[in-house]
Structure formats: C-alpha cells, structure tokens
Amino acid sequence: MRIWLIADSQQLNSQYRAFHPILNLSRRGHEVRLDVEPEQAPRTPEPGWDAVFVYRWASPELRRFLRAQRALGSAVVWDNDDDLTREQGRRHGAMVSQQLTRAYARSCSSPTP
Image (cartoon, rainbow, N blue to C red):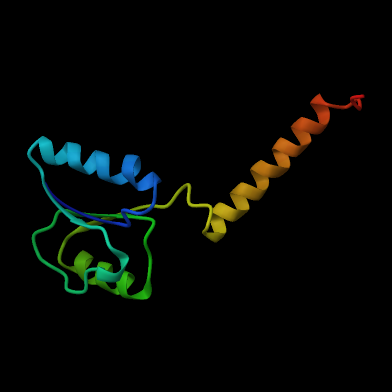
C-alpha cells in the first residue's frame, strides 16, 4: 500500500498515534510519505496514493487538497478523536471533568481536619 501521512511532528501524541505506526508499516514493505510541517502542507494532489492519514491537522487549504486527493481515489483517514482543542473534544473533556468532580464529592463527603 502507498500511505501518505500528514501530521505535525511537534505534537507529542503524534509519535505514538501516527509516526510509530506508519514507520512500522514502512518496515513491512508499505510505501509511506511523511509531511510533518504545518507550514509546508501539501498543495498538489498526486495520483497513486491508496490512503492519506491526517493526524490532528485541519485548515481550509488542507481540506481542499484532501477533496482533490479523494477525487483521485485515495481514502482519507482522520485521527482527532482525543483532541481536546476541538469543540467535540472540549465538550467531552467538560463532561469527564464533571463526572470526576461528582465522583470525588461522593467519595470525600466528610471534611478532613
């Protein structure tokens, strides 16, 4: 398979969520391309890529590029499920915070001296 990774190498989670898996696939014989600098986001779609894996990176330019890349037949895979900077992540983070606060209040109901 030919897999194109688009990710910011400065994000800590990208190491285990994107780079390590893609490099393991490379060792197993898959062809990979790494674009790791946000300022150098791809602008021109290229035919022949089976999949484009995007890790926590979105911009209007990138979305235009991905639409064009999909039109060439590439599958697009997004990984942003634990990105708490996005609206969905903030709502999830707030919900978890509320649940933890309630659990703490129940388990620590008596004041300590």
